[in-house]
Image (cartoon, helix red, strand yellow):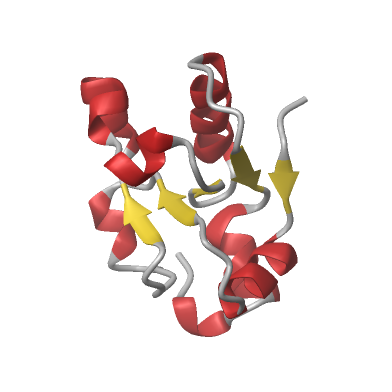
Length: 114
């Protein structure tokens, strides 16, 4: 089993000063429909991750010094990315269960839905 947080937990973290990266693995076209606005957000679409591997990630993520919460639309792609990074030796990667869809429904409707 891989680590996972709820969208409610993510909402609390986003309101805090905690240092982390929120890694959104959705495709660019999806971001126009729903997006969390936060300075800790980094967007690396799954297609880019598949193409470039770890090189697609920022130095902050590659350093493995702070937690990385991974989000997508419903939680499937982000779980795939979480599992892949864990197999690459990453210890502090966590899936956001339910994805941005659940976040919009349960935490903040202003991020949009599709």
